Length: 138
Image 1 (spheres, rainbow, N blue to C red):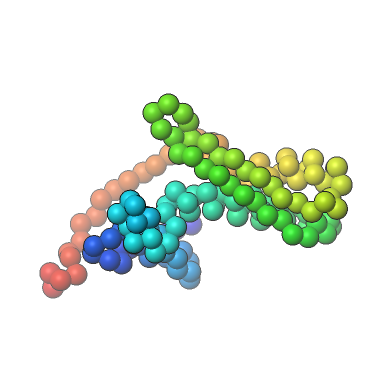
Image 2: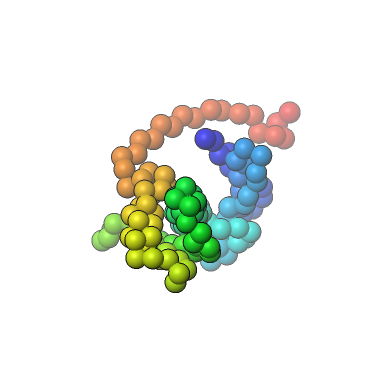
């Protein structure tokens, strides 16, 4: 998997993100020096967890042959600061027609989504710097 972020404005933090054949915009809110042209990277992280959880629940229900209908996942996210660890609070909104067994299984499977496992697991980072000529240097 690969994502590329390119700045789109020399005076703001707006970036166009390319993922496969898709494009989206990330920016900072006006109060943080951005133009608020899109969600912040931190908000995109919360969106990744919420959407991955919802998709994982829906895929599991489909494999089980359960028609559970509409699924909604609300993710509140507070990044780590000097006194507390990063925290995520997920609310799974499932139809009232779900059985107790379905609710129990869906609650367990929600915590097994790939993004949740990535955030909860060990992570490694590699970084390198490549020098490129500025566009107007040609």
